[in-house]
Length: 522
Image (cartoon, rainbow, N blue to C red; front, side):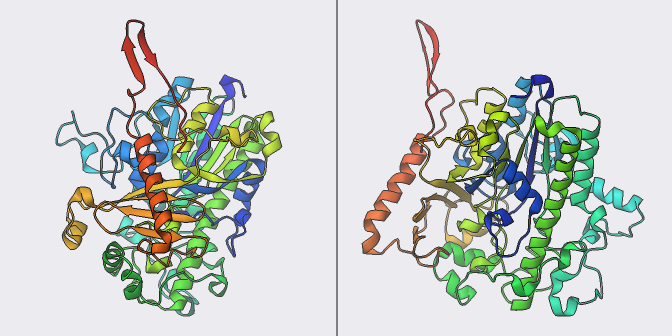
């Protein structure tokens, strides 16, 4: 273990990154050489899943180590209960000052705050305990100001920054998302974040630090600066897995039909795109996916810059590096774009952990094929810092895998939740005849089977061995009745075992306070 006065953590999170989009995993076209190099120096977790979607709930799970059913940040805008601790507050116990570059989308607990407190006017608050190196929420004011200072003409500010260049050569034959924005790659928000992190690190070589660097990309809008807009040939990009039509897709489940109907709104997914994405042709589809891959490559290049800095200064010998993201991306699969629903592409995400310690050397380049979850990241970091994970944590440390072991009692399935309520407009509630609290689903996924249990809508069951793209619902198939029973039992047992338990394992009696910390298994 590095000495305490040199212990460092670089915790990198991207946004909306599909789990298979690493060339180290053999993706058909995506190239991520810098993340591949990081994986070669660390451990790559192939079957890693987020706990929920979209951004705020997913990051709440990542940063508190809790399932959504316990932290209850169910949608963007739902506040994080102040009684919960998190990775930043816990890391401070080791003498570290966790510093944010980017965003955590953490709405504050409104209780005790004045009604006019500006903190209650946005869901893009900062995680308690985080110092701010650079906050870059959706308005992106610091980056926009930087572009204006460099002479960019942006009369509409944020509204103009992602507009495609007009009359860009070749765009007519490549699709709308081929045109780059007005800014260069060097002046992009991706480079802006990396620059800020590198400046911060440049004067802290001989100090401990904890940096949480959050890159927006490959989150929409789907537009990439040169040369990333043209990095991938559309003809080489795989097409989405989907039914013959949106109507055929939606006929499989009422929730899916409702979601697909909502996704017909122009501009809902990627701003400035002029078309309904369920009606675009193959050229447009391939280019949207190619541009998404280009945004991934741009983030990979900036991560490479940060790793080069650590190697030049020698800090790589003392720095734990984690790369992951909040949630995945449908990218046209099942006619869907974004991160809604229950399908694997929206919840399967990357995770790479590089442990600098000498005793982690024998596992460098290891690929772990066991199910891991976003809630495991916080206990892993705390374990590395020699801190006890708090009782609220639903995950487990991954350090045994990094040491070369495979715990015999490790989980046999991945789990996630999704909440589709709409507190403001009541859209799903009205369309599907549900209360807000009924707009929920839970998923348990083993290697072969996947159960999607809705609170008040019919369930879905998939045989992933025969049907890897989740096209055939077998919930009512008599031949699958034993599987349905087993998967339902698994889901119920998982929820029961992870009920909120901060004080449940505490006993107060004549001998004072006794606290037990049973291992998490399911």
